[in-house]
Image (cartoon, rainbow, N blue to C red; front, side):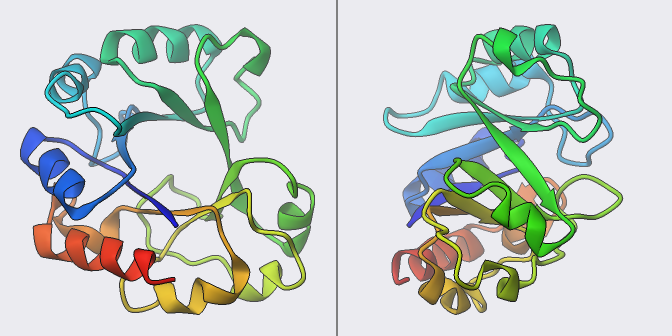
Length: 196
């Protein structure tokens, strides 16, 4: 199972996450987030990373010009986009992207089958809240194109085994404080994900 650790704010955490075995690192370009990072700061981290680790930029209700500009400046390889308010013209993006579905009901899951999307629990704020999506919504659904986020931890990952998710995304469960990761928690999380 592929793993992404989101909310990277410094090089040490990025390198610790890579040592733990993650496939992707997430950088939050939403200024109201406590995990926000300036594009040039993210770029400095990305330029120091080893190969075969994907850099993912997280955006919330942004237009395509902003996303293209920040992805270029920060050297992102993928844009992860929350577009609740239909700001983004996806046809004009210059970068690969994955849409975030903030699920309120099982219908949100069913309506996105066969698409690579990130499924998170709907909350009023954006990201890192620790709220979980109801697993029963995934019953009898092909989850092989879904990345699951929201409230995941090393303790509850084993509950995902029957569903065959494409990947998992974590932020708050592997932190010491908001924006600062805990190396051991990252190692434990990735190990648990690899055992699914």
